[in-house]
Length: 113
Image 1 (cartoon, rainbow, N blue to C red):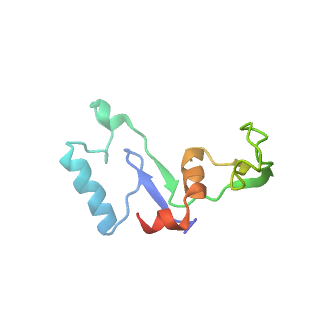
Image 2 (image 1 turned 120 degrees about the vertical axis):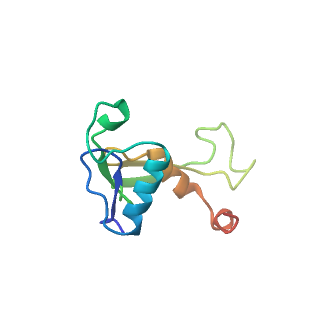
Image 3 (image 1 turned 30 degrees about the vertical axis):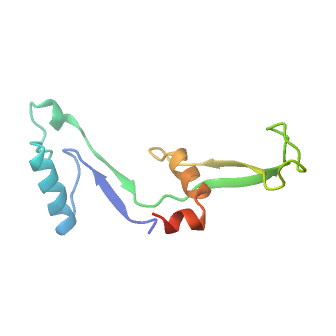
């Protein structure tokens, strides 16, 4: 999965030669945009790029912060309050907020999606 890339629309992109490529063309055409060739229209000046469907984080480390250290609470007040500190690196174009969202989802929350 981490080897799959998707094109970000632009005039310098090779679109897939399958139904996904046709879907890109249909959506762009529906918006009145033709990014296959560079033209005088501002919308066509996007060069485009490729993004991985799934990106792995580099140098991922984590640690538990003692309960109450950052919140002023004690373990006796709420024994389930623990805080984790994560550090990691992502490639350009990736969003740390998306990774953190996935880390914080619980199994019960995923069942409701």
